[in-house]
Amino acid sequence: MKSAKGLTINEIVHLSVVYPALLCRFIGGEYEVCHINYDCDKEGKNVVMKAYPVRHFSKNSGRVAEAYEPITESLDKWHGPFTDDTEPKKGERCYIFVERKRSGYTRYTVESAVYDGKTGFYGFKESAELSVLGFLHIRDNGNVY
Image (cartoon, rainbow, N blue to C red; front, side, top):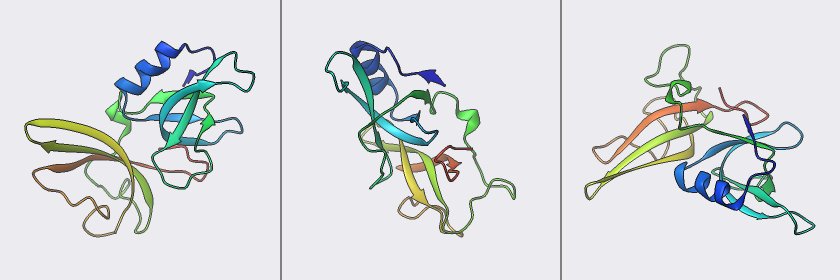
């Protein structure tokens, strides 16, 4: 993971434009996949990276991230077609890497979704316009594997 301490506004803006989501580490060892933005620290002197999780209703929303890792940069970490070892359990919440094609352009996003145990992830039915390219399991502390 790369340290978020000492980033400039330009570096943070570049990260938020280039990557749809980052795996962020917070003080205390919690991890979460987040969209990022910048703000000033409490003294108003330094620029900090604030994280806004892709999961709804997270206690980490708006917290300062201590470190980050671009999770879409290395797709080899993502699980692809299900095997006995990687298939999520029914009702398990995962991060999914989604490809959407519409009107001649392709967009990639990282979402949070629950596995239904039979056909895939709730709300993400595969079609010509939507494909789930991979998923990551979420540990109790929010780290992914």
